[in-house]
Length: 299
Image (cartoon, rainbow, N blue to C red):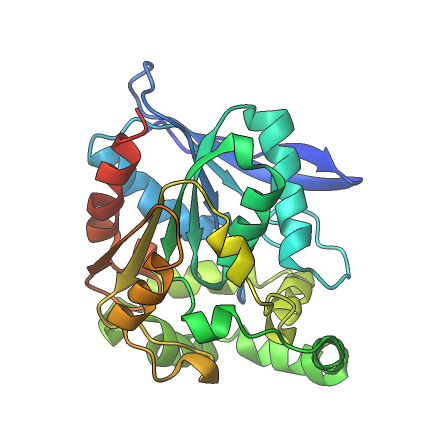
């Protein structure tokens, strides 16, 4: 892989949006580009994908990788607004149309899969396929949270109480506990690199607006029809220890989650690998090995 590329910017709706482009050392890049969609959380940004990107090229793949920071995260602007999956999908639609300008495979992590669903709906011609990593259980992804509750939760978080919570949530103690209980299969994998990435990313407290938007549940809609309308080949990849952080999905098993998606996707395939809920980070080698054959089909 080339040395860490410099951050580039584009302007969308008067906001500066950051991204990086990664290429292999081989100047003759091969295959369809990948567009990564990082999860939302305390201190999270496109840096979530760093291990994946290194492993992707280490395993001999040569696809160009586009790794943007969603609005509210990383080096992108962080306006004080409530973000929805449609907002981020519009941002990435513009990014696709003006920067990449060619079809891609979307690789999306966890509960940000609604952004991918919305993006496919908005710009189907520039999306050739999807990889859904650790996507939420079916009862979660089809349970619409009432608008009044979303607004109530947003107002609660966007207050001195919420700000105090965020300052606590960005401490190593909280991040270690949450990651161990909810994200990783093994506590040993909650390493210094992971925690440092989150602590540094959360130093800018304006990151809290994206986090509060997620916690308020603006992503919780009924995506049944959007998922069923996806015509592109879609790989659903789950950890063998996958678990839900939402009560609606607590009783779901990885096999059950896969079955729910595959029966509804027009061209869906599914696979399980070691790990829990952050496969691109916790089980990087296995994750790359699992999706590489799928991506190769598009060359």
